[in-house]
Length: 272
Image (cartoon, rainbow, N blue to C red):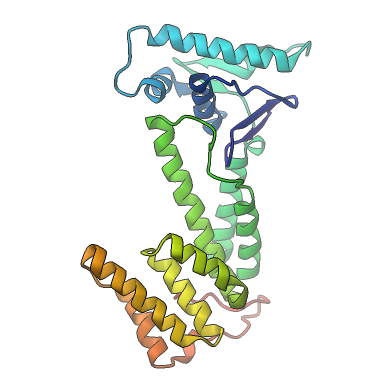
């Protein structure tokens, strides 16, 4: 089976799509696909479709949606011997399980690569981290489940997935900075800061990239813009960490310059 959720929903069995066109069965499949290999309680699927206003007919209607999915699976299986739709979409312990291996899912691969990249960054291997995290982010082809109606269950899932994507992006930028790619990062960082003007970590990365590119005055401008936004919108000052970075730039602190090679073949990790 092939499962893709980091963009439009794609679920293929033996190369054939089993994604239904109707919205509610598509929602059910999306919840099952995100949890492929694990039992999803029927109550969770009902909550996704109906929220807290679950009708009396919910159990029967849910079974109808499962039957529709199994019909799609049956078409994909064709005359395959020894395998039925119920072997692929399994009824188990008061719920349903979409049978798939971890390597079949782009979400599981993203989690594997981003975890490996984070670990590489922690041990100081910035080049490996940058590569692994770039590969993880390359699995995304747009907003997750972009073509699926979203209920309360998927809504929470999407928040967590987007947070994981942003964390991987920030770590990849940190790794790229550590290996001296500050100049090539400038356009991306300016776009990200424009999109997320109060995200302090992104502003810190932009400031460091500008400083290392010889534009310290622009880095200081970026700090002042953030400070103005925070004061106006929230009535707070930038964090102590960002103010420390600003102060070190004003003082021309050498620790902000690209560090020497550590012996791993890349510069040491530098916290902004």
